[in-house]
Amino acid sequence: MGKVKYRLANDDRVEEIHTIVVHKINMGDVEDPDLMVAEPIYKWQQSDAGKFVMDNAVIVPKWERYLNDQYIGWTYAIIAELEAKKLAEYYLKWGNNGNNP
Figure 1: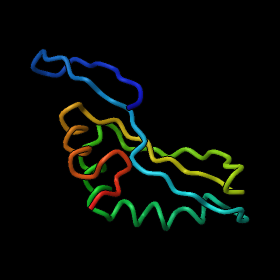
Figure 2: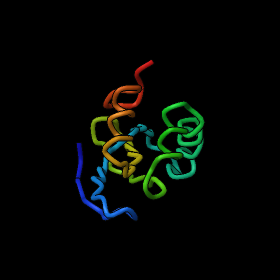
Figure 3: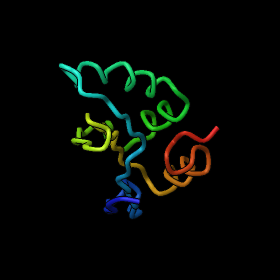
């Protein structure tokens, strides 16, 4: 798991918010990788795991791009913040990498 922070809910409860990588996409060495990765990100958003994350994330998930020397291209990570209960539900349904059936 990633970074954990806490926030005070409206009913004076303290909620645990976890920042995790919910999906990774490898993109080869293309002219405009940000443009080319749009379709795989959209397809992930339309999957069951993607819809769950988009509906239950504390804030809108973001993506980050990293240079991947082994792949000779880029790795895109979709990062989301989820409450502890929603994170547990996500892990039970899709596992750590979001690809379990």
